[in-house]
Image 1 (spheres, rainbow, N blue to C red):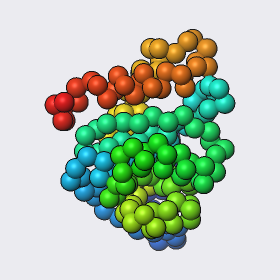
Image 2: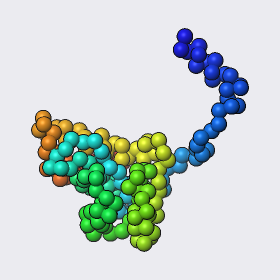
Image 3: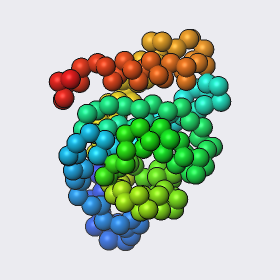
Image 4: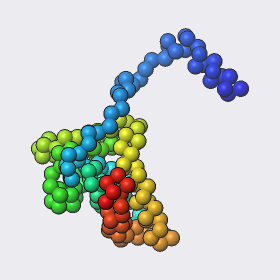
Length: 183
């Protein structure tokens, strides 16, 4: 019965004409440009909804798109843009220099005015991924999955000390052979 109703509604010309479109036209998917060297192009994302660990409840994942090297930084979801920007400057820019571009999703932090001004002032271009298409940057999705596997293996059954294992997970990931770089 449900299928009959769906078929009828989807084939009804009057229904199709009367329904207004409430969104902009979807753009074409295009992959971000390939990076020209190490730490020239980064991909960043938050892993949210992780169990509380020493007051940390999220992980900032930074991926060098050229070498596939990772940085895992424990975070608080309630941190404001200024605090996260400072962590990013201290943990990434100070060690690896300024990138040419950063790829990120449309998370509220990444589209904030502070983050936009920071990028403009540092002359870093942004590639913002298409909404609702996490596969547009499949590299991050794969890294998130691997990080979750590492933490599941090493964290106590209470899952309350994952932040203490992040450096080991980062070391293990960065020292494992990567299938795309063969290093």
